[in-house]
Structures are given as structure tokens and as C-alpha cells.
Image 1 (cartoon, one colour):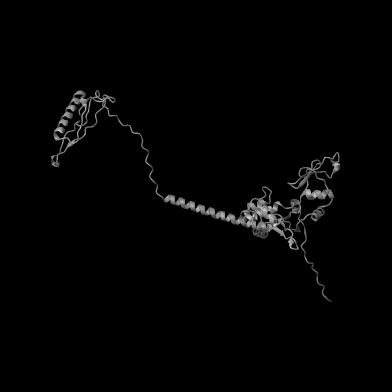
Image 2 (cartoon, one colour):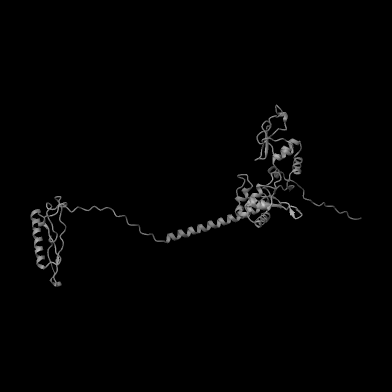
Length: 370
């Protein structure tokens, strides 16, 4: 009797449409149009007409494109409904059927059951994200934006801005990409797209070739791809390490500067600035002018041994009384003295006698010892 072997079924990966991607990327206005709801100025008629007095003749269902939600001002509380809730309420189906209905009409990526994509799959990001609610926050705050080339940054932004709101795909030719991104060479466009695809920031679907021509390729910007987020984390870690090394280097330079400043001798302080000094006036006790100090007159002959010192006199000062001196009047001819260079010994002796006589007159008149 042959042994019965157990048949082990082959395990296949079961996938389903990504619900979180639907809520974030599938426009609620596009779903409302697929449901046959007439939309005018961002409003439509509520499907719960029984709750309205005139059957909601004045549409009260408002759509918020920024939050991708809708709300009836009569029936709903604050918050409203998502695009999946709208399909469930209008068609009266469950969650699975509503998701399947959306996936049949829009290009929705699949995800494995039990492994939803989101923050749980991705390693925790050390940089701060979620402040402004933009997908570009991750690429900028992690430093990946600065690590990209100019062509890669320009092409990535251009493809993201021209994407279809329903499918999320962008169909542009190389010429159009060059025109809108500012990249001048076609080779730079090709290399930038290849590098973005290698980093998992861009998915490329090549167009089909028809004869000698080919359709434009389709591009999808995937900034939330787990592999791309891992690259962002690696760039952020490298940047933080470089910042730490630079801070340590600057701190070491500061310590060396402080150490050299301690060894340098302290310079002597700068001398104080010169102050004003009070100089006593050249006056006597009576308040009048006092003659200056007597100079030492030394008369020398041809031989050094014949030199003799005489007591100080007022000779050569040409002193006159205060009554005879006027600042604005000239002296009389009799009081003027004219000196001639190269005087002889007799003239010097006569001048000395005259000065001696003047000194005696000053002594007799003022009682001053010359």
C-alpha cells in the first residue's frame, strides 16, 4: 500500500488595494463624478434627501479638496466623510466592495495582506516630519534635497506638479521635461531619470514603440517608498556625523587658543593720559611781575686757564620799567639799542657797565635784588 503524501499547498502572496493610498491620492471630486453626482462650485446634492426640507434643492454637500473629504452641513457633524465613506454611503456597500469599486476605476497600487505600508514598515526617522503635511518635507529635512544634483531636483518637482490627480501618473516627453524643468541637455535628463529611478524616488513605465516612434513614458513620483526613506535616513546620519566632527574641531581650536592666551605674558597697562598741570605765575608777593632767574654768565678768554666765573647779574636782559613798556607803542630813539656782530672788547665792557647801571637803578626803584 502506497503511503499517502500530504499535499502542502503553495503559499502565494495575497494582495489587496492600498486603502491608505486611496484616501490620500484618489481625489474625492473624481469619485463623486464617477458616482454620477452633479457638482457645481464645489457642492453637490446630499444623498440623504429625506433629512432636508425641500429635498436639498440648494446643495449642502461641500467638498474639501485639500483634506480630500466631504461634509453635509445639515446631516454631518464636524469632520465629514472620506472618499471611501462616500462610496459606501452612496452605493450602500461594505468597505471591501467600496475599495474594489475604486480600484477598478483608478490606478491603485496593491499591498500585501498583513503588511500595510506606512510608518510601521519604515525605520523611525530621526528628523522632524509631518509639520506642514507635505511629502517634500522628508526629502528636504533629511538632507537628500541638498545631495541631489540640480537636474534631479528640477525634474522631480516638474514630474510631481504635472501628475494626474486621479492616477498619479505623469506623461511627458523629454522635450517637455527639458522645457519645464530648465535642463538644457537631453543626456542630463536621461541620466537624472535613471538616478531617480535607482534611488526609488521615481517609477518609470516605458511607452510602447509604434513603428519608428514611441509613446511618452509614464512617471510616478514615489517619495514614500521605504527604500527611498532608508536612503534619506542614511544621508541624515552622515550629515549629523559631519556636523559633530566639525563642532569637535572648532572646540579643539577654541581650547588651543585659550591655552596659548594663558601662556602669553600680560602687557603693562598703558600710561594714563597727560593731565593739566597748574603752573604758578611769575609774580612777586605784591602781585607784580617778578624778573626771571639770573643767568650764569661765563666770560672766556683764549686760554682755558684764564676762565673766571662772575656773580649773576642782569646784564644782557635789556630790562625796562613797566611804565616805559607798552605793547602797542614803539620805544623812543634814545631807549633803543642796536647790537652789532663782531664787537670788540671795549664795546663789550661798555655794554656791561651800562647793564650794571640799569640793574642798580632797578634795585633802588623796586627794592629787588637782581
